[in-house]
Image (cartoon, rainbow, N blue to C red; front, side):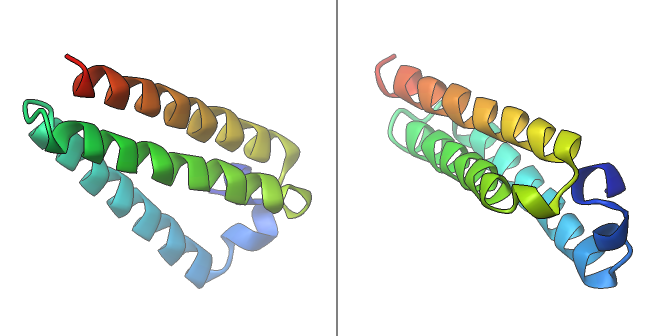
Length: 97
């Protein structure tokens, strides 16, 4: 977590709890995406919601980039932003399959 948020931030128990919460959120969203892939109505909506969550992660990181390690911020924006774009593409493909 220190590579992502920095040594000082990673030492706080509240930050570690936040990290666990985000991990649980991502697992739940991933399971929802997998579970609804075959549903032509719900599947694209869940995929779009997952993409939205990834987009919010990217934007939040951009807004706080000055207080984060440069490489951690860059990696988070790249992964979350890329996931948001791919998620929106997949939502579109699922909706029009």
